[in-house]
Length: 84
Image (cartoon, rainbow, N blue to C red; front, side, top):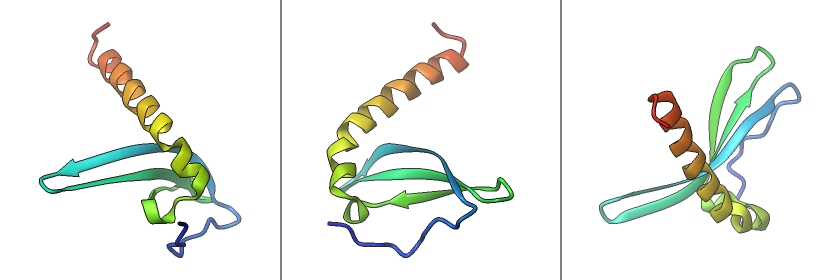
């Protein structure tokens, strides 16, 4: 199930956050984990973990993570738009 993409964290990198997300269009769909990584200079980058790169535990946690991300994003959007 896990196919390494080739990226690794440098010793000075750290993960700032990660979230599960789905995407779909006409005739296609995908699910992935986005990972925000900061380097030693605090420069941020986003890495994407595709389904064939996920561990079994990532796959098991994916639906819960996606639901949490969607709900939290909805509430944050509402708050930032001034709605309650």
